[in-house]
Length: 223
Length: 223
DNA sequence: GTCTATATGTTGATAGAC
DNA sequence: GTCTATCAACATATAGAC
Image (cartoon, rainbow over all chains, first blue to last red; front, side, top):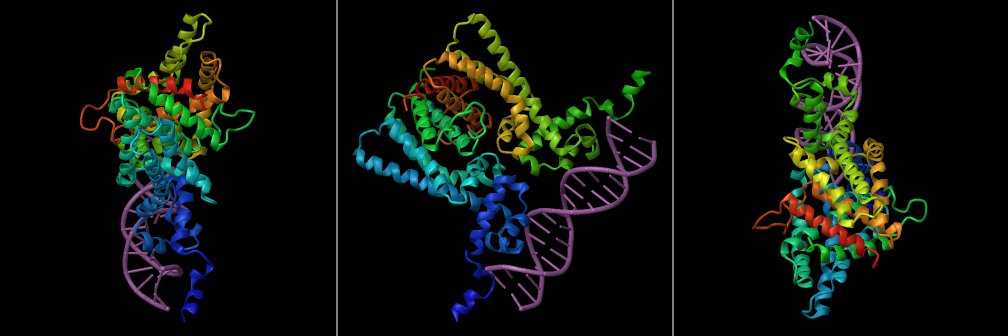
């Protein structure tokens, strides 16, 4: 009965169509951009049809938003879980700056490393949020990042009580810019980073980023 | 003779076709991305035809590279001029870190501010270099940035003699990520930056960036 | 140098069978 | 849910007149 139904048809090949579409869309959007990746190429890579994609997502734009949300949400959830845990443990005391920055930065590296096949494409997803047509993603950006930003901003203000909120806000954005750049894979092939000898590991890059951002945040007021 | 020739034909409307094409392409590539901006839309905005664009640039891809080169080259020229002048004045002594960073960062702001109508679109040009299909721009990136990078990297090593070259290389890339983010206009509309009260001026942002990057570079070794 | 006209392919979305 | 077939619109590039 239901066994026969699940075996018949094209759903039998393992993995449901919706998930295959998300995976293919992620890869092709990352490689070719929103306009460059045609719905036909995506659905062909997913082993399905254009109309199946429109059935599941309604439009190409909605498919883009679904791919972005799928990757960003777990990172931000992890960030907030870490921050919650740290604040509970600190029992009201301000968190050390390095600890706070690590809670914000590390999840991006962890989730990227945890993607099996998506790892190679994950790198460009964050960048797309900042280069694809704003009308497609600005609402999504607000939805995904506003609650996160407010929590970390408040924690930074407690960690740096002598800083103006403008200085903290700017420095926080500076750090976000660095993170997007690194997550987009621009360190690979960057001139002068690990030239000749060893390319730095994720762990090295993260440690340097925390040190750089912490020093930068502390020093940003010496303007 | 030549006067008549210059008056007749469609070149008389002021501003030559090539320049109008570059201006229109810049705007539409910035707004819609490489694939999103059609050659038809660009040539129509420039008041000319598709075949004129292909005559002047050969292909849509070459037109993209020309728009990028047109904006990036003056910035890098200015950077190198400043660095040359500073090193001559220092007569062999290492340059102060803040001075060096200012020479790298300020030209980006200056050139952006100097564009009359291009200013609104300039912001996304740098970002496009880092999100458009790599095969279209990676050679161009190397051509435009390698000589620049080598000069500034050497100057940074002299300014920070106790830092490893890996630490300097990474921190330099961190700063580049911040600059691209800021030049891409993501500060505008960023949550928590100048919310309510005054939005920071270019001069304020630049001063904060120099202070942030200088402190970050000095502190990046405390990993 | 610039145009009109056109060749040739692709796009996103939908209608309707199953 | 997924398919095939089809639509109107649009793409890039070129040919050839002027």
